[in-house]
Image (tube, rainbow over the protein chains, first blue to last red):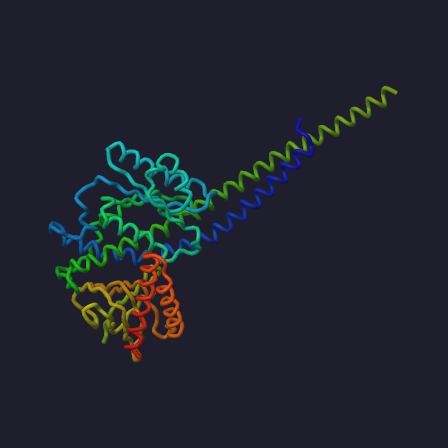
Length: 292
Length: 135
């Protein structure tokens, strides 16, 4: 039978764990609200940008010699996978899910005989991908200094992707991140960044009129595509941040609940043991008195 | 004027403005252009400059940098990487930043740092240039 003192210690330790998880849950909840607001505030820009690019791109269809960021390099041999994860753990299945999604894609690409390169954002994903694909990771972006994500934080990533694309280091770039749907659901999303792909339905109906372009179409496209890449990266980082907090909140909520259940169970055992000890002592005293 | 132009100013971080106005003067790369209601569809990239929003008497002036403007039948959308009211621009702070940036350029140890510092400096020089013109 467990010793009373041990039980008491375990109860205290579970209680303090519960305090921590509860606090983390509250912190995550308030951070989530901010992250969600930021993600929602960024949506109009990214959407408008996509609309304009979609209409531009649709008018470029069939033309030879469009910008490389839109048309691609004509090959698909070298695939770059960008995996965006969080810097901190204790956020449920958030990082695991993203990495799982990326891993699946990577192994299927390798099976197809493609050359796969990996860029990681956030140390959690980097740590778990390093084991299997260490040699394939060509770059890691540390985001731990970022407290509140600003547009400028996406800059270095964008610059890196653009310059290595220019240098012909990869043909196709896919970004893995978790799209925020609600605090309970985050969807792991693979988005093809380069060459850019657009939904045809986003094209705004001009009612028969055509856009005037200043300067001409090609120049605008050339200016906008890199910018769009930055915006898309920024947006997915924001989505990721919101997802991370949402996921952490849910995880910490269930951890708090589990801790509560555990405390109840321990307390029952503790009380039973205590009673058993008292009964035992009484029996000893009574039988001692009888023996006299 | 009965009908008004729907105008939206968006930065990557948030929607800054979404109102109905009389006219907006946009600093396009190939020159400023005014947009009134029922303007023909246009897509133009922006240069660093002053965007003027006319609604009522006093035009509101905003400093915008990078991005583009789109006019479609629904209205005008300006996507700017940076945008702030001209009255909020602190000239002295910018000049101090420029001084720092110049020092960074001078202190840069390798090419990467130099490129970075130059980028920061160019941005400030551009903004200050616009301010000089406006003054």
